[in-house]
Image (cartoon, rainbow, N blue to C red; front, side, top):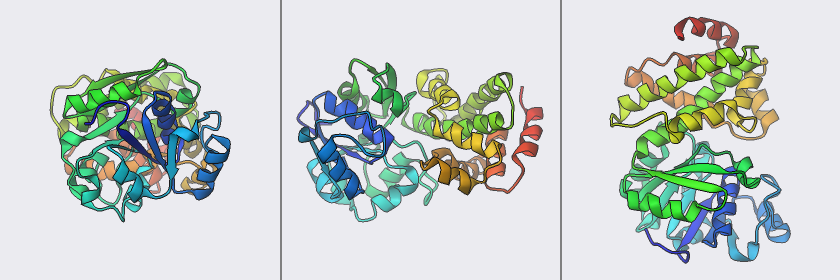
Length: 334
């Protein structure tokens, strides 16, 4: 990975997490490019120095940021690429990008969902579709909400890559007064955990919407981290401590926080909203909704016992009553 502040970093995405990453990286005097699909949002940014749709309080010196909707041109100029579009739109975003576009580049995923067209995590998608070696693929994950980054509240990130020198270089670029960044070589475990935690935040939200209290949710989350551990150990069995921030911490903040769109989405389902009605009211993507379908397929393939994930799948995709399914789940928890 090219070092120093002069190597160009491209952030792909126009949502809250992409906006938060741009804030951190540009404030740290990195050479930053920003891809957005929305031309109106680009013009607004250039005129008013803030994203009109997400984290509007975060202001940018747009003279120091290259903002464009020309993805091919921005990729060509960048040495490091960070993907921060919702996972359901990744395949469409990169449909016109060729393998040679990513040659000699380092690519980080800041996604928190599965690539639905292939039932794979982003790292696997990048490796399989574009031939990027795993040593040049990384992940940036929490526990961290974009809203608190915008407020410059102290937050912690985990940067994972099988090649630790690559992870350390990105961690250096992210660290600042309000960001601490740790590194890990558990690329697959951290990425799957970042995806799974959204499903368990949905479960927590559904239970809250149905009137279950803090006592039950503590049990639900305790069982959730065990399911996460069982799942990632079945797929990638190496030694890891799931009680650390990248695993348990990320689960806790997503399950409990008022900023969690997955918890909010689940809460609305618990209150009786249909999936479509909840999506329309939120006007943001709850990654867990898309991820649970892919994860359900994988857990059957590897024969992992995951009653909480099964409950969420049944409530969202199998047309079953969330109330009845949760009542049944209570007998399977301890």
